[in-house]
Image 1 (cartoon, rainbow, N blue to C red):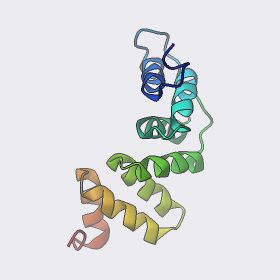
Image 2: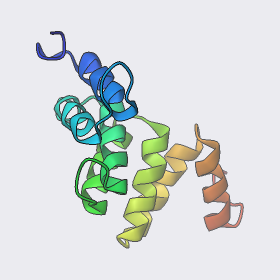
Image 3: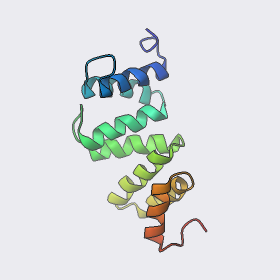
Image 4: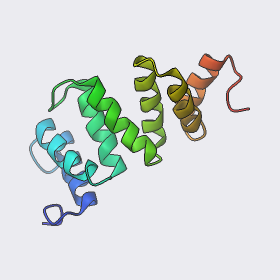
Length: 127
């Protein structure tokens, strides 16, 4: 009832439960539906999970562009892993300046992003 009333945290939890088959039948399609409802309302954790589903084609059509759009939305919401994934998506699209900017932001809180930044800048990142 909370999710149906618009509670984004409840939507996220129903999505997570469906995605991982916890307390309900496993269904990435159902998970994507719940995540999308919360993601469209600006819920960053749902934006990341929805992006992950698009990036892997689970419960939705494989769509790297749609994944990148949702990673970027969550990145703007301050999620370090989303910032890293947005950087990767932007780099793949040839938007290297924007990719580096997101990677620098992510590296402040994400060890994997810091390692990537060190690789792409020859150790000169975050100085």
